[in-house]
Length: 348
Ligand code: PMV
Image 1 (spheres, rainbow, N blue to C red):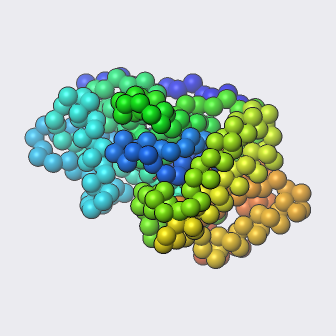
Image 2 (cartoon, rainbow, N blue to C red):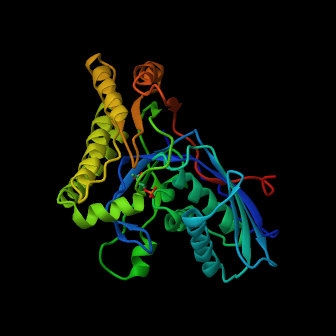
């Protein structure tokens, strides 16, 4: 599988308005822990697959007469932390563009928000692409990835379709250097026909934000450093397994990397526990599938939901196996999806 060509069309928009679409991604090697919260610089490299489900579509229109940004998320005015994050992100874009105009942002997100299904990844990738175009910033895909990172780290990877690696960047040197060298890029993989079966255990908001949970883990968990070190080795092995199209090895590495990340959180003080009883039931189903000879491997993010990596040809069987583990939830089958892109015109 080749990385798809990126058609981001980062043409400055004369009209000061643009609409972009982006998809969530699921990390097979996790991003967990920041070394710079302001610049959103991670402590570890990460690697993900962008999905073909749950897109976010976001339009940005500059309003020269407005005194403040107006943000609508899924038809409702954004407030509190959600509004603050979007305004902060627009401030970053405005500073780079040398413009002061406020914006009207309208975002439709089809992923259950805040459920550890990376709604912030698709959200900030779409916002980065639309805002850069609306403010006339002619950015290439790498620069858009860097920009999206400022909104949410995982968004840096959703700029690209298929598989992507996000480089942590140098641990020493100036902040400017670190900022420049922390971006995602598409990854070439071998002959894989992967699917991710998503078992939504609970679509409600998470009890602790990933930002707060990461901070607590890095600051207090005795398991954090050992995981970060082993994650480096996981990434090297993962690259080789992806290139070889070896789904069993890809899955084994992804599962151990995710369980290790959750172990770091469980050892934090106080513990951060996202895993729910239904999460463990789903993990049992995945184990049973493997005992039955189906290569299926689980990964979990900052929430109780389970994503199962398997062959596309096995996805229906895997979905069936996890469905009764989540009687109150839903099951979705995702495949590799496209990178973020501007919609023609201003998307309307
Ligand atoms: O969505 P963010 O940027 O706050 O980070 C969440 C990190 C995980 O989803 C738990 C792991 C990852 O690499 O996506």
